[in-house]
Length: 295
Image (cartoon, rainbow, N blue to C red; front, side, top):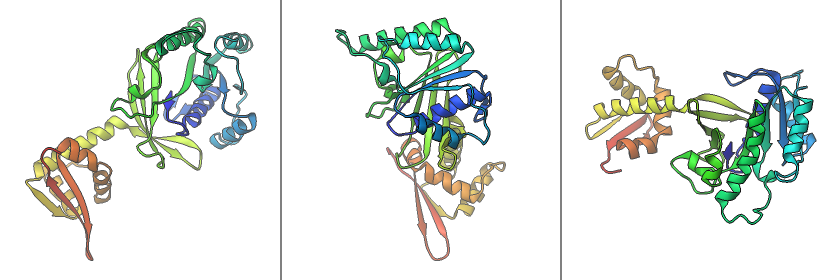
C-alpha cells in the first residue's frame, strides 16, 4: 500500500488491523477474524495505543492485535522473528509492515534497483508461501505524478510485479481530506474507491466507488452536450429543468447539480470541451456553459 508521506496510510493500516483483530468490518466489507501483527516501525507504543483508542469503539476487544515497534532487517532476522510469532499465534491472518523501507538492508553489491527489489520480495514470499495470511507492506509513492496511480509506487517492476495486489492512496490536494484508493489485484477484481478522512474518528470513511462517480459525470456530460449549442446561461433550477426535459428520471436537485459541476470543472473542459462558469448578481446565482474547441 503506497502513498505520499503523511497522507494517512498508517491510519488506514491501523483500521485494517482493527477490523481483522475484531472480526468486524472495514467500511461495508467484512473481515475474517484472526490475529494481527503490526510492525509500527515509525511509532512508539503509547502513540499506537492512543491511535487505537481514537479509531475503536469503547470496550472493543483488541486482544488479537499485536504490535512490534522494532524489527531486524530482512537479512538480519526478520523472517525468524515472524516464524517465532507464528508459533505463538498460528491463527494470524494479517501482518503489516509500516514502513517497508525500515526492513530493507543495503544493496550488498547488487548493481540495480531491480535486483534489490527482486531479492527483497523473494525473501518476503517465504512468509506468504508458508502461511495462509496477508502480508501488507506500507510504502511510499514517487514525487512525480502519473495518470496511472500504480506507476507512482516507488521502486522497480521487481517490487510491483512480485506483489499479488497494489493499493495506492492519493489526494488531489494535500490540504484536503478527500482521497482516492486504487486497488489492483492479480487474481481478483480491481477497485477505485473515494474516501474522506474523518477528523473526529481518525478513520477513512468510504464515500463510494470512484467508477460510479465517473459514470455520473459522463452521463451529465452527455446531457449537457445535447443541450448546449454555443452558450447557455441560467440558474441551477433552470438548468435542471432543461436536463429533465431530456431525461425525466434524472435524480438530481439544484444543489447537487451545482456541486457536481463545480467539482468536475476541469474534467468537463478537458475531456468534454464544455467550459463551466459561475456568476452571482443581486437576485440569483447563474451558471454559464459554453463550448470550447480543442481544450
